[in-house]
Length: 173
Image 1: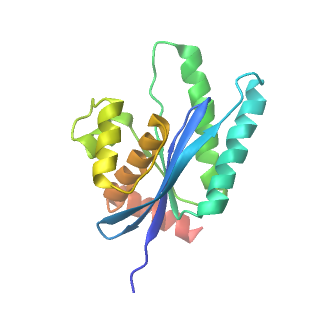
Image 2: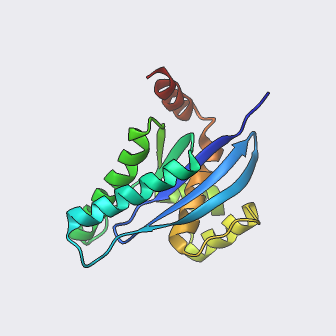
């Protein structure tokens, strides 16, 4: 008997980290939940990273995903912002890895191409296509919509050789 696979998509950010959870069975996908983990901008960086860690850990504890997918960091002209995003991304990688989940990473353009069909899509286009692909999906922010798009991308690509290898390594450990 086939069972569903629960996937969490994570769109890392220091202020707002979006998350989206879907269930997949074969080619079908079902929306489970989405939301944001936020940090308090008035706190020091270490405290904000703790807030992201604790918030993501609570989401994983509640929804119990089987696999995680995360957007890769892109480098922009503001080196400080890129570094802070990288630190938030480190938390987003750490939390599911500590729970023993295989973690797949996808470039922003790969997510856009998988969801919209073009690697340079706008945020609004992603929101619309996520809603088309999962009409019952609810999300209150672009970050949560992006996280669902990341989860959908992983659902689409999880049959690839790389994804199968990552799952095999995780299951063996």
